[in-house]
Length: 203
Image (cartoon, rainbow, N blue to C red; front, top):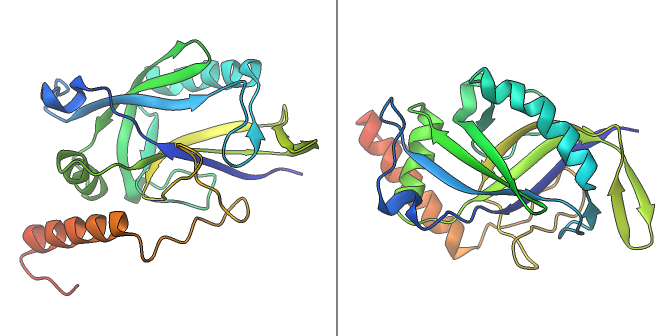
């Protein structure tokens, strides 16, 4: 049975992404980094075969070509990209071994402006693949099955463990990070941004 599959890792920026002030032809911030890895078990205990990612990326490339490979800010529980919460657009992707990297344009939307502020202030965020599919238990590994369909990549604040992956208690529940100093910093930055943009702050 298909279910929402969300896998999150810290988005490791390439060193030049921010230091060189790379922008799109429209003047929007461009960042580059790792999106996903095939052929190894991630922190959620899930395993994606290379062939599965290759198939989904081939389909996803059409969205990239049409300039609509959109993603959201924060952790949605839907298989539909909500345009009201869109923060970025993936403009290019490539393989390096079994790893998928992407070039991402941060859009000047309300969510995109928050994301841009986080990047510019050195905050590490997570990038989350979102898709629908089923899992098969093989030993201690959950293998993602052939019915998997990639929906989008989103940016989230979820902290991770085991290096770069979070460990949710189930497929749709994010890690509890209420007391995390990392997320307190994010909250302060978002609060300041909203107050400065709106003039009146009720937070």
